Length: 114
Image 1 (tube, one colour):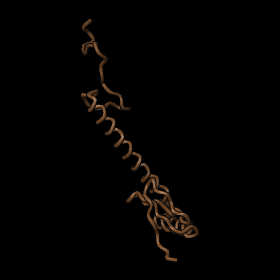
Image 2 (tube, helix red, strand yellow; image 1 turned 180 degrees about the vertical axis):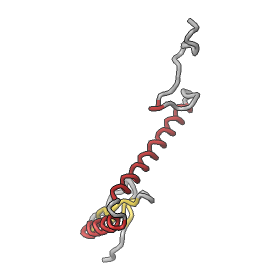
Image 3 (spheres, helix red, strand yellow; image 1 turned 180 degrees about the horizontal axis):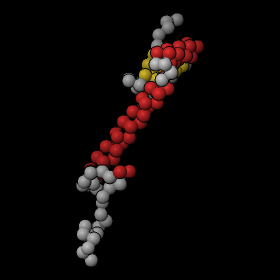
Image 4 (cartoon, helix red, strand yellow; image 1 turned 120 degrees about the horizontal axis):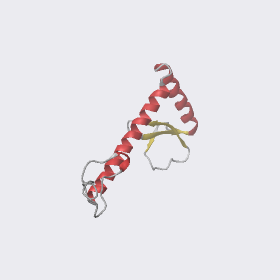
């Protein structure tokens, strides 16, 4: 039996007999190893990072996760803005929380003009 790691991208099925060892955040790929070895490799990797970073491993993983979440939110906001621009509902910059500055039909821009 050849012992080597496999890569699984998001949405792929994990092959039978293989388990997830860890997530490589830089390449956004899951590292797979045969089932008894994935637990051993994950434990050794966590021990190495815990000792090498003096216990700051959780902080590193948390910061990496926050960066990925922020990137996904920015990509979502850009997609919403492009959709609104394509439907000509947004003329100016995007407001917080995805609200646009669209005036209903017949509404005037000047509030004093009654």
